[in-house]
Image 1 (tube, rainbow over the protein chains, first blue to last red):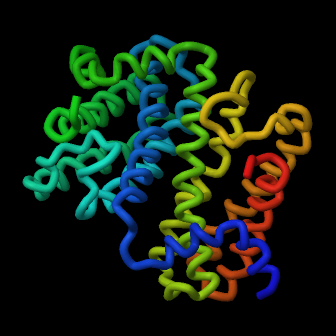
Image 2 (cartoon, each protein chain N blue to C red; image 1 turned 90 degrees about the horizontal axis):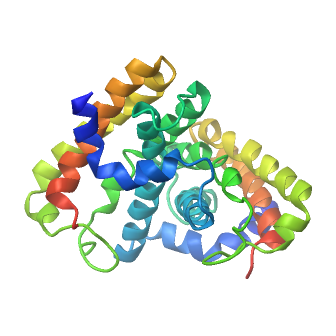
Length: 147
Length: 147
């Protein structure tokens, strides 16, 4: 596998990180924040269409919805021990009320997985799905994200 | 749509950004960097399995591959004018050799879209697909990413 070794030489330090059983807290924070950044931007795009602040475009809405849906279950695995510190807005309450936090995450995941189909249907369907998903984002932010 | 308005009040500033025709350069940089962060981490996970630095796990490999594939065509739209500045490793050569940069992007996108199926096949198939995709990452990094 010489070709593999050459192709991956650039990723040597990264693969070393990935090979460890426990992802370092700062890497977990970076991963969840990166995912939320892409989700937030693309959900905002859907919201702008839903609020008629920009024209509804089925193809563009579909792409944004795909990204939100694809990433929505990713942050959950990156709220491990020690990730309440550093560059994060995560509140300590997450780890005190973990079952509630996880339940709110589940609702968000379910609602966002419905976005791709809704985005490709029509504007009224998108509006409904965006309101539903937006409510699940807000519910978690209200309790678990620092202002 | 009162429910929609309430659900999205939290996203007000974000939707204002999304509603503008041109995404601000710093937002473009943030979006592409966030996407690359998630892609890099998950590709490194696949690479660690391909290099047998960690055990091959079909389900985990599939999830990582899905994320890489879902995000791979996202950064491309966030290399607009003025995004060569700020917190970025993007080299000025991107905008001087845009056709070549785009062609390298296309190759990466094609190679990464093959990862989900390969990751769910078997280890030899994953190794081949990871080497292929890793080569397309490296080709672009060599020419267009600052050390």
